[in-house]
Length: 108
Image (cartoon, rainbow, N blue to C red):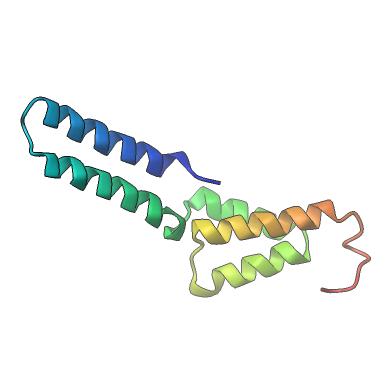
């Protein structure tokens, strides 16, 4: 799922650069620079760490079952959770929740 924050950054950079370009305050290269910065923020967003609330959510999701716990342990190997790892934890916890008999099933 694409988060709205990097898209908002891209829109703000482009809007500001286009506004200044329209007022003949900056050259067109600044518009290209703003587009590049916005695109970089979108590209780097999945590798950024989640907030403290996101880490608490990951702890709660790790209690959903064995797959969620395993995904949480593998995500916390370096001491922080990125957005990509948080998506993997959500997916694993969702599989645990969807499995009605995970308590009685054999370990995977």
